[in-house]
Length: 185
Image 1 (cartoon, rainbow, N blue to C red):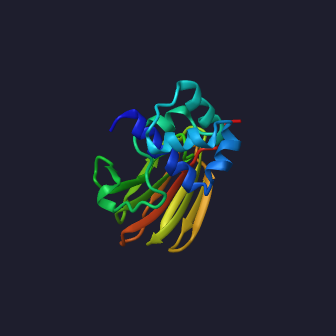
Image 2 (tube, rainbow, N blue to C red):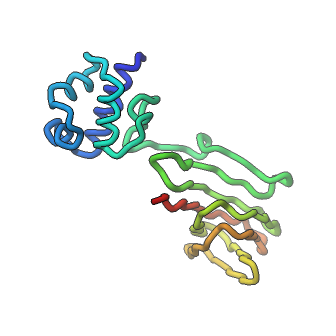
């Protein structure tokens, strides 16, 4: 797909996802309604400055408009599509469904920990971690604090410190983990 078509599709998707009319978008960006309509249809190749004005008006990075297609507002990601990693012993597994990027300041994982196994995590740069246990029991060690979470219990902590996940039971433990990265001001 050529860049003119790409920009048009991305702009249309952003505008409709935000429920903006062309008139409202024109007010936000300082670009005429007619020009915005032509850009969305892919019938004109906008200048670099026009793209900058649109990105500034929408408060998005410049590359969001010129980059690959923006995912639909509702996407289904299956476990087999998630990015899979495991420890050397193959007892700790994580499935990364959503990665941090310029539009998303968090990462979303499913974690599995086999019975009687633990995993030591080094601290994460400038993040908070949210953990929700789906199945089993998780013992979490944070410095000198020991926290035990049962099914349907959750906690959060500053993840810049090393921490340990431990399954002290004879059942598989599954949890959702979200690493949240505060936006810089």
